[in-house]
Image 1 (tube, rainbow, N blue to C red):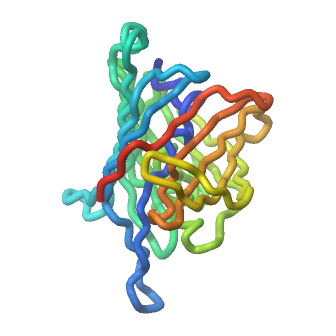
Image 2: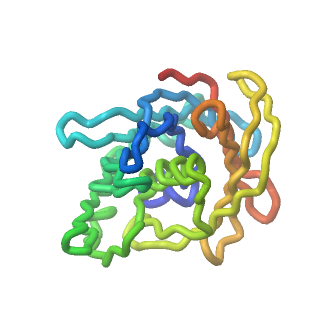
Image 3: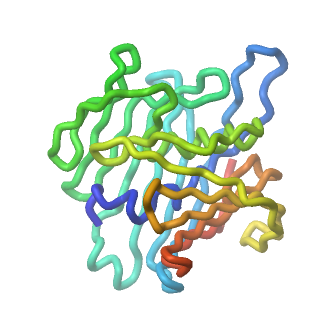
Length: 241
């Protein structure tokens, strides 16, 4: 699966597994994001097709954060998709919001490389050998950093209705809706969750994510559907902090 197709299949599916810890005491203290490692199974139309691993850790080189997602096919699907899909986002937290610094993705020889120049107001790089030079507006995210931003917004009770996300070689608008609470059985036990749905403007695909407040708003399940029919699902198996 080429990197250029990642968002069409997995945007937000490999959802924002960020364990958000309580903020430090003080009006100007920044939110604390706890490092974690999480493992998911991935199903396509009820058929197990692979696994997904997410890892959040401090980045010593920049003093900020590095968020890595690895998607691996399994069984017969490994024949068609022999290379792991790897996405990485380097970002910082300013106040209560995330600001991406750079994004990288690769699957075999297919790559995406984007740098965010906030002082100059531009995002520059290359996507599938196509040059990228886009104007940035405040709050724009990449397809990984958006996951962290949503977690912080849920924690702070201020999830916006729309986000601008840099995907491939363009910036797209997505609508997010908080649908309500749900009790969910998972490999981690039975959990109270909050359901959030997202949809690209004009798309008939909907992504639903179940976030567990007791786990720091870790999303424990995600399902993507088209015209009401389930296409793809990811369910958490293990979580380490």
